[in-house]
Length: 444
Ligand SMILES: C[S@@+](CC[C@H](N)C(=O)[O-])C[C@H]1O[C@@H](n2cnc3c(N)ncnc32)[C@H](O)[C@@H]1O
Image 1 (cartoon, protein in one colour):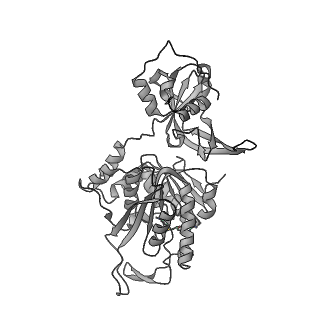
Image 2 (spheres, rainbow, N blue to C red):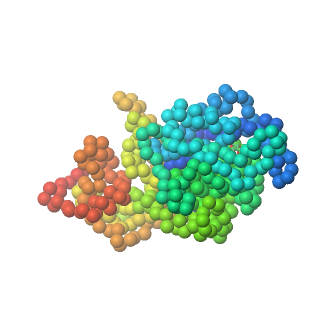
Image 3 (cartoon, rainbow, N blue to C red):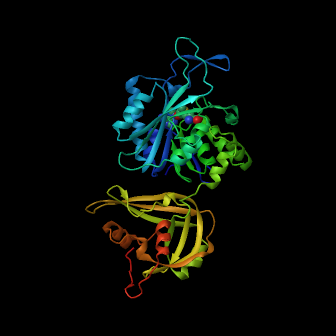
């Protein structure tokens, strides 16, 4: 089990210390989005100008170039590890300059990603060119790609259009470089501005999404994620940078700091635009799952517990009893009476604090060996009762019984959890056929 360097009290911000090439293979989690700001490999003794002073462009040993083959090899390794940790519909953003971006682009395609855009971030305040032999470098490129050719990705087209004065958002973003208020917890030599990260997060994720930054540095991605109610895991091999990251998270735990920061983000027509948008953003993970099978008499004991376990198995590289994605969910609902076709939603629900894989084992000796997973779900608080959520429902309507796979899930795991949309739908056209309603007696 990986031990985080830092885990925030709200469970929305995790930091891991180490080399991603070693840490990522140990992960058992899939993310909705990845932002990666990898080494650009431009620390080769050059000079630049910062606040009127000539400074070296060297960022650290992690940024030194060891030649084209080395850069390709490194990019291939981390991109393929990261791809494995992305959900099927997830997207990745990789930032770079001419030093690394061609390599990244080529390898993304080689690994089966589909490139969606190459965004150009045009800095409104770039440093001047010191040698006066080239144009001033005022842009960085950010490649946006989805995990696979066929699985659709999420894009908040409407919001992006709104931010661009009701015209389609272009792939050139004019945003300022890092501002001094963003360095209140210390300096990282290549810190990205929050405005850039907030725009790409809002464009490509839904509320409560899980975001990974494998080269987290000072965790601009994590701060942008938490300011916009997304969750975050960041990795870095430098402790000093993780310390800055941790302090940045502690800083925004103060609601008045967080609210002030939201008003300082560039790219919004008015200061209140981002806070207003966030307030109205619907959280469709909010009501996603129902926890199954508490017998009526067990409800009182369940109500006083705040830790549950879910069991899942992997078959043909798929975790088969999470068709509805518990990791995306925010709330658990209890229902009772597993033995009849009609179930009763008890009205008890609780907010999920965290979901973690606790144990994984492989069942050997079978024709096709299977992996079993035990997920621990910790609730933020005990269950509370909501009258409007107590109703009866036809369990068959929660599953598509015409589909063979669905029937299999239904019989095996019935229904450890079902999606709230399905529940709502079934509730709308609730017509329980009492004549044919038979016991289902599931084998769990
Ligand atoms: C370009 S910086 C990221 C800056 C970050 N976007 C920010 O806003 O602060 C890249 C970071 O990757 C880290 N790094 C480089 N190679 C790494 C590796 N193999 N594993 C983990 N971290 C690495 C460096 O320590 C550095 O902090």
